[in-house]
Length: 402
Image 1: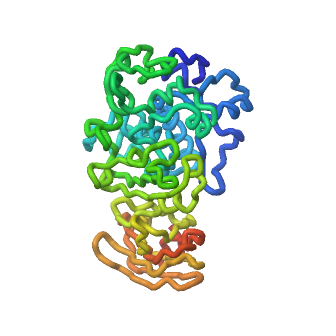
Image 2: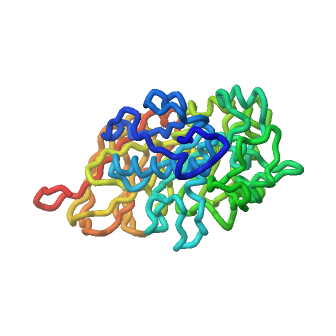
């Protein structure tokens, strides 16, 4: 909310990218990055007028997330990012992915960083924790306590609401901005931040799932982490049934899964085990994570949906030269069992992974071909704390590495 006005909204005037807080353009050692709307941090950076920037319209947040993704891709020289969003952060992610996207192969989201590809969102995986995918109508003291001083008249709180008698809720479920009525009334009703409060809004959600006319991309894996705190069928802020997208008893989209916690809303982002389970490497090679030659990659053997202990992690490697693939896998109580290497549908190699360092050679690797490396394992209560490491490279017969 860069211009400091709460009564007007503008995607042009309200969004200002300050940049990395420490001014450092080198990669994060742990490859973790945080998008921060905290007003106090803006003041420290010399920007003192950002009234309610931490409670701005989700339309604005989607544009800001685009800038963040661009910055991370640049600093990491990466192809994709993994997005983990707590509470409204999950809606921010959906805003980025869904807005303007029609679900076709030629469709592109308005905010996608790359408009040339159906993978132009540049997102590998999405995890939400306690997100009000279908809204939250909590108000009063509990809202203020949980959201640390939330202003119930702010744009963000306006956008979180779900339909009640006598009012539409345009952001989540569609309708005309002028038809939104709530007590207390919001500072403004300009949901799409274009200077008018008379527009019909295309919603993120429809019924209990996403809006089919502006869907989530299906080339991403999703995990909805939900929580039922002390048996209340909510986490203290969001009703359990509204923390995920579903059609009947089936989670949507089809590539999604869920995890169920039993903690309150504010503690959800501190549950590292759940987050690691959520971002777990996909078993399906259609969603395989890309490996780079000689780059150390760490992975986790974790429980899956319904506490399934059998885990498989799929990676993709494109050979830049012909020769011998050398895999180096290190296991230290990581729960790994075996590694399989495929050339398309054909199994080229299968090896048991021993404790310690394992070196595996696969001959006759062909330049330009794509190979899939699948690591299987058996999850335990502690395997998520002990990642395995993987390095892949191709050596030419004369010893040159690519």
